[in-house]
Amino acid sequence: MTTSKIRIKLGAIEVEYEGSEAFLKEELPQLLAAVSDLHANSGGAPLIQNNAGSGDPGAPVTSGKRIEATTASIAARLQVKSGPELIMAAVGRITFALGQDVCSRQKITQEMKSAASYYKKTYLNNLSKYLDVLVKDNKLNEPSSGNYALTAAARAEMESRLA
Image 1 (cartoon, rainbow, N blue to C red):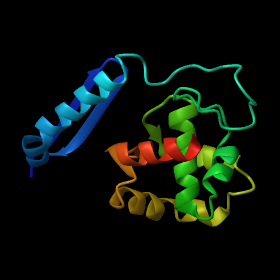
Image 2 (image 1 turned 135 degrees about the vertical axis):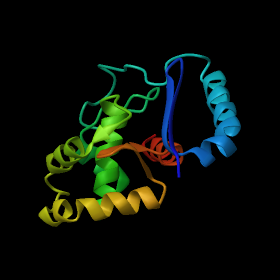
Image 3 (image 1 turned 180 degrees about the horizontal axis):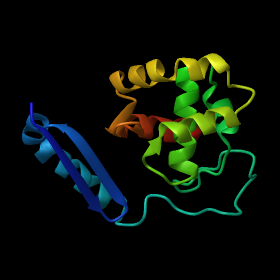
């Protein structure tokens, strides 16, 4: 199986894929159409907006697409009860609050630990298993080894839950 890599950047929208060449051959037209539609619907403006100083800094603020929150406050909003859910909260903070679309395993661990009231040591022991499950469940992509990003569906779902 041949592995291919593609990165599409249109304004503030960036899509990166690494995987089977067959997927790209079959799905690239739909992917390009979706990216084009997304850019058009965003009015060509940046998707992440800086809302510094708006609202209570301790709670998630979703004015625009920027969220100012800690991992713990995002975990509270998402009603986290498991390791995979805490991983999603951590990736959500990295994505929406820190503005990084791709995050390393180390950064995810750091964010999980910062939510002390939700974090359990067993979550770190099972991190590889949890990440594999989240990738298989199409909640996270692994654009490169040890780096993760929210899938488009998971991103949209999390944005609506945090709104």
